[in-house]
Image 1 (cartoon, rainbow, N blue to C red):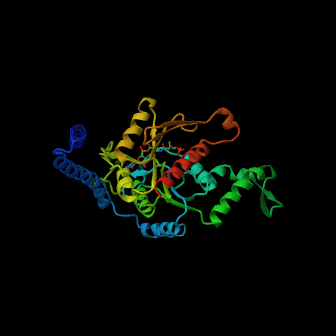
Image 2: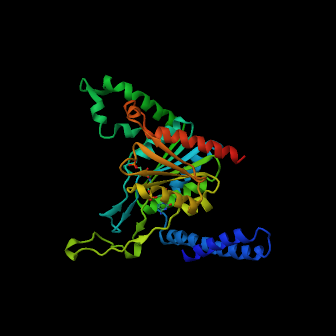
Image 3: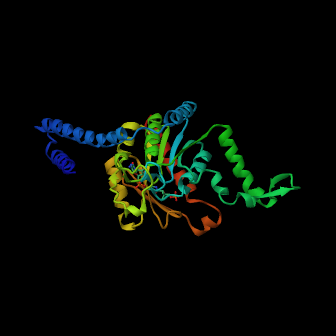
Length: 345
Ligand code: PMT
């Protein structure tokens, strides 16, 4: 931090003193060198994290599926949506884990609207969190069916109007191979799958829509209990470590050419904008979508790299009409991606 502050000050000093070019070159070389070292430092944080956590056993086969999917949709607009929360196990034979809050509504609803907008979708989601289309029937599927003559089942007539269009869209997406769902559970699975997917999607056709709630803390495997922690040993002392922010690697190394959106969830309104701007300054991606836990279903803030801030608000009338905020978010970010796409030609 002290180093980066020094470099930033030095840059500010240089930009105010070297407009005539006199002596600036040498300083610039020095600055660039120091900056690269600092960037390397950041890079090493996450590289060390990956080195310390081997890939999940099924990683190669999953990432091959992703690769085949990406290759079969070359030169089509594609979005990687991350959704749901990551877990951090506290035991190697896991009984207990620390979780991040996310039901998966934002990601799963957005996936449906991206498909409707013509995108091909890779949905990287927490296992058992909400999934596109299926989300409409969670917990209520049995109530929508009825038994006929003790021999077969059918959809209740009263449910047909709702179910049919959803089922049709789902079937179209699957039959046309436009939706790939990839589940994760732990932070480590998420980290590996995110990296692998981003590296396959490094083109201007791609959008990264990072809505997952990713743990900022983890327990190194060497410090994790092997078996279930026993309560009769007294309260466990668990030291959590900081997870390196991979957004830096996403934006600078894995997918510099893609259109990148990160999400920011806060509970205190007074820090939301400032945190979003901080992320944009640090990671240099295109957009942060900020939301508060309490109001996330009807209000989000779009904070762009160029400083423009837009509010998306869902009115009561919208809600009564069945409009979801993700519909409005997706049409907004699609327009931004279109502009970005054109500007890259
Ligand atoms: O699923 P719902 O119930 O509908 O809720 C949706 C939501 C509120 C979870 C969603 O809209 C949202 O805000 N998601 C982001 C939550 C959040 O603030 O996550 P974070 O602080 O863990 O990460 C912020 C950004 O940094 C994310 O884009 C993430 O991809 C990135 N990150 C996080 C951790 C990490 N080690 N590296 C990262 O790059």
